[in-house]
Amino acid sequence: MSKRLTLAAATAVALCLPIVATAEDAPTAETVVATVNGKEITLGHLILVRASLPQQYSQLPNEVLFDGILNQLVQQTVLADTMEGTPRRVEMSLENERRQLLAAEAIDALLAGEMTDAAVQQAYEEQYANAEPGREWNASHILVETEEEATALVERARGGEDFAQLARDHSTGPSGPNGGELGWFQAGMMVPPFEEAVQALEADGISDPVQTQFGWHVIRLNDSRLKDVPPLEEVREEIEMQLQQQIVDARVQELTEAANVERMAEGLDKSLLSNIDLLEK
Image 1 (cartoon, rainbow, N blue to C red):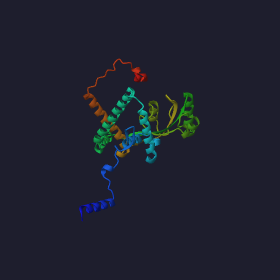
Image 2: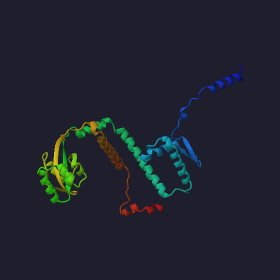
Image 3: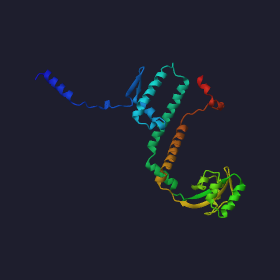
Image 4: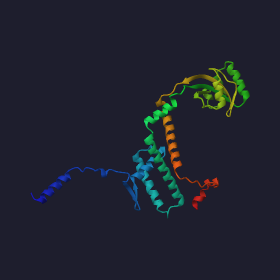
């Protein structure tokens, strides 16, 4: 068989075989989806817009969003092309956004290395290992405007009238329609005068009138209990948030102390902060 026939046969066989896509054919962030006056719009540009959409739009399927986002970027590009140069306020906005995005990337990288299960476990043990069970209270209240109203309601409640009904009839607070019930709460969750009055009561006890910034309260202690130390999984989210903040704060302080920071704002009129006209100069 001649070389020419062999080549022709090989070509025919090749044409019958399926074409296997290579890794280079797979779309990437750099895949160009449109050009506008020679400027490229890539798949990565679309992905970033998609990721930043408000929740009501981000829930739409990609098939709906794709063309809309692409049209938006095309329109923005043709509008941007009408500008001669870049206004300084736009440059400053880009500088701020770049700074913010890079700082966020640095935080993500920092937390990826230090937010381990072992670190979370250690933080949990440090906070709860030797913690005493905390007391919780369950109370109801009636909120009124004057001390005279509160005093009269104290007498009626102590006289045996149904506290929940008194709250529904007389309380001006949001819990009134629910019989004044506040549910369970821990120390520090109520304003001090209210909390002190609750802690002084026995179960089913009715307080004297208590004044706070909200008005005058008549308080009934429904019950109290000791709350056991929570398991890790119950407080994991809280522990992780605290730990993240500690890690970031420590690193920022370390970097700031090591940096050459010069502040030249001394004596500057701080009211200039809202002078948007300065960006036009």
